[in-house]
Image (cartoon, rainbow, N blue to C red):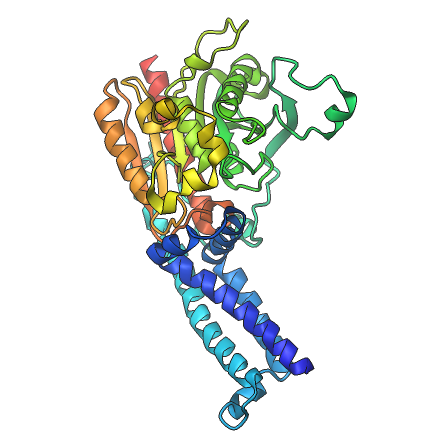
Amino acid sequence: MLLFLITLAYFAFSACTGFAAYLDLWANPGRAITSRIPMSMRFNLLWTMGLISECPIHVLAVKLGVMGLAKMFGVYSQVSRARAYLGLGPYLALAAYATDLASIAIYIYFAYSQITSWQTFAGMPQLKAKDANGEPRTALPSLLSAEMMSQVIAPLFVPSEDTALYPDISYNPRKTLSNNAVKRLVLKTEGLLDVIAPRGRAKKAPVVLWIHGGGWVQGSKEDPYAFPYILARQGIVVVRMNYRKPPSYPLPAALVDVRRALRWIHQQIEAFGGDPEWISIAGDSAGGHLASLAASGLAHLKEEGDDEPEIKLKAAVLICPVTDVTTKANGNLWQDDFPALINSISEANANDKINPYKSLKPDSPSMLLFHGTRDSFVPIEQSYEFVRQYKQKVTEGGKIDFVLVDGTNHFSHCFAGPKSVWQGYAAAAWLEDQWKASKKDA
């Protein structure tokens, strides 16, 4: 009986990890299947898929360890008796073993795609540029370099000592908290931001406001993204913020918070080494949606008593952004799973108010857009359409660079894999180009 229970547990582990690997490898079936899973389960499944594709060596090590334990407990010894023994255990063991072999092949493919993804980022014009000595102006770290190994040895990103974190600063200019002292104690972190600044760098550095994803309803500025820290290591002052979320705070509350954070940056960031006259924005997924809306201006959300001039953002970096909230693609994802988001805006004006491509203006800033070819959460067709609309509507100098990241899914950038690190370097080089170009024009 004990052996059967161990075999059953081993089969469940193999089936779950194998299923996630299959969905991650083939995006279209993955999208069709995951769109029919409840949202809470979908996030967990997609997070697991991101872990598998971005940290395949880590997952492979765990897989081999579990297979070793299965062998030690005699699970595999049943396989040879599968034909003669009519019990379920041997067949479960055989199925689990076959699934594991297929999964291992997928993990090896994912590891190979990590190596080849270097070419995607190295091919960007900003990374091909040479300095006065003919050397690459911004060199991507080698896969086997000490810097890269120190970052990817753990599945989640570990900040280095060459950045300084200033946490939990209030950006809310108004007293919006309840007067009830007990309620104040249980309120979480709305209205707070962190500043991540490079140590020992010159003043007046470019500034980026980072907006986390999470389907508009979850996530936090403390989520262990590599992206903000890599930008800071490259000399950029990064501000990461929390924002109010539906259903307690329907849209446009999150966008009001973005506007408040931008105002705080303009007033205070010089004390942290940033340039208050050169502020850009970045975000992933739902955060990319908010960032793309903010990039085209939030003047319509100006609050009473706000006499600050409108802050003109200089650039935007969008990672797998949601650019069509009301689309029926992906199994009515947005309408069915985020009714609080959609219902917070009148049906007649929904498209114009919350769809980024409809908010684009002739003077919208330049943008860098990353999207993975295996994204089974946000259809890549959204980014193609956003790029098309941008090129039609933005006519006053802004340009858009669209980088397709081969073999990457929606959650890949959440982990400390090589692609996440290289993506951060590529974005930093692009932002530096935008910053230097604006200084020349000034």
